[in-house]
Length: 202
Image (cartoon, rainbow, N blue to C red):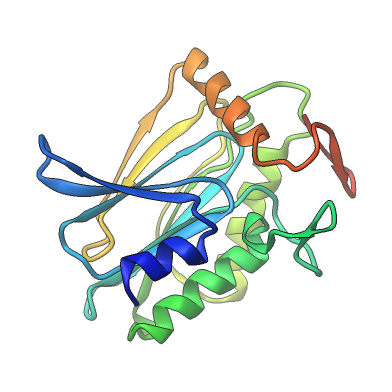
């Protein structure tokens, strides 16, 4: 599947540019999007507050991908009446694994790393903790081979992921940058205030 097709499938919430200093292509994934690649010249980047990103790869077929979800699960895949399924963990995880398998990965060879789920802002209903718990439960139910879980805490994270090898880098954000991440995540909520079950966002 071409890069152009992947960008379209993520509703243009993915951007790609060439970094001359790193001499690599940097692919940025925003909330509610995912990206799959077998290109050794690409590094996938995302920034997380309460959200969680899963980095999944097959080192033998050298295919990997990253998603970025905002809430644990939803049966219909609807967010305020709109179909935004990849913003929910259950849909995002299934979609990422299915795309990897379609491109030649084998499920028994998949390895995973999970990042994020921070309770960056107090009084937010512990959305980060709920996302982190979902990631752990999903991995257990699906019997995924988890190489790393870097979840929870009170700080945002910047993640860089090399899809073909599974290498990942995590940098904690300072408090000011963490608040900026929360503001950016809020932009992907269709309404300024949305209630989904017992979870209240912004």
